[in-house]
Length: 119
Image 1 (cartoon, rainbow, N blue to C red):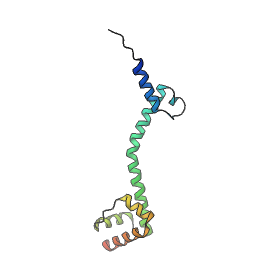
Image 2: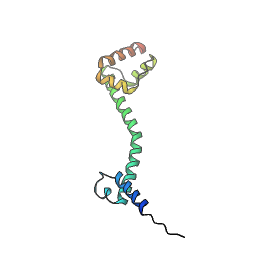
Image 3: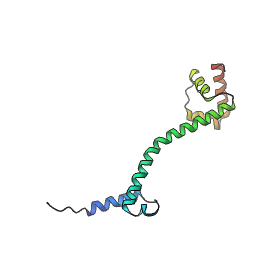
Image 4: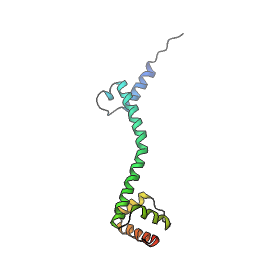
């Protein structure tokens, strides 16, 4: 059986991993084995947190909408139910933005919900 020399392939693989590990602290950016483990862990965290970010933002939007609703004397769940009954299809992101940057428009939505639900 012939001998396999892996010089170029191995060097390219090591260089690629070390390039990904640029900016890591200590030996994680210079030694291949430590860098490889750190890169794999970083990619795993990034994959998980890309999904978690969507959950986090939804929680933030709901919290902001709830706070704005409470100032108007209505709970979040009653407000969202009233929006659904009055056929207003705004997502939570736009409602949260409206609650922060355009309180008058948000208050008009609350009054629309009050008329629909008779709270």
